[in-house]
Image (cartoon, rainbow, N blue to C red; front, side, top):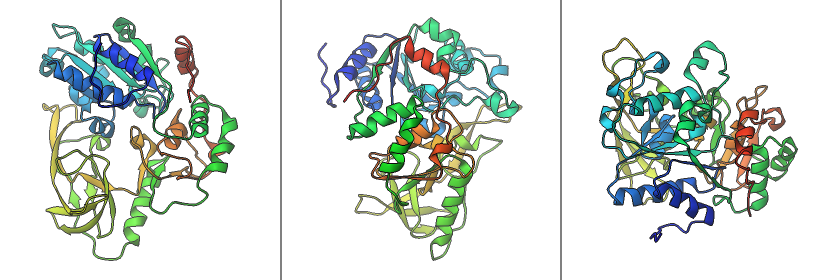
Length: 415
């Protein structure tokens, strides 16, 4: 097969790309930084060039924004009590022309969610190619019912669903990391992901020993991220803006909002763009240099010579008040958020030049894969600082995940 590539792909990436282009249902797995996104970008460009329609989705709102897609809930018109819904052709009526569905961050998709996606797609009158991408050693699925009732499901991963077997995925592994150049760092990240506690001292000894002032803070708990952002705002001199309040009807899950429900800025505040536009891309960081109350915020984005005027944006988000006759509501919001601190969950899928990892005192990392995700967000360990007791973190991977990888022969990591 002759392929005109924009990227210089490694051998495993080439094989995965060819599997996807063959029309097979593919599960593309690899640890953080192995170039999964490059394979998907290239595959989508080639398939779209062949006239195929692709729908990209992810469980989390910010992760969906990064890939230029939408959330699973929004795509399949699911309520947050989706397991109680009676599904019908209505859930996929707008997907009648779709040929390929790409599910990013598949490790965050639960068994129930995967079965619901399969049930929805069964109403289509044509087969759809499925491509799922991610790393099951990263953050484990977050189930909405678990959030409300406090119980863990016996079958929580997507690969435990009925439809996983039905789709008969061809599993492709990427095992050569392209993000960081230090193989010792790469190798120890791999060992960390597999639950080897002996590598924790390596990260402590080789990290940057002090807080990096101009680095983003990645926090194990949301409250720490909110506290740091508030402290940074308050430390700035000058006048605060009036609140830029998001507006919408009904009730929404604010975690799906690509921005802040209430954004207050000052001149000098570091901010991050949360959507893609013709003027800036999602994740782009910059500094507020001015604002017009209720209208816009002027930002000098890093690496740009000119000042960008950021205005209100709109997006459709699913409503969570299930008695509403409307599945979605239009949300008007300012597409920026303070760029000093975010949660580890929201950092998934992103890469930063410099990182401060904040481990909550007395709590540590509480979810499978959480510390692994945090320490693999940076490009190097020399530009990563860890604040808090890393030895208090839960790092053991789920035994079910280890067994899943074992059946395909976990390829390890290559230099």
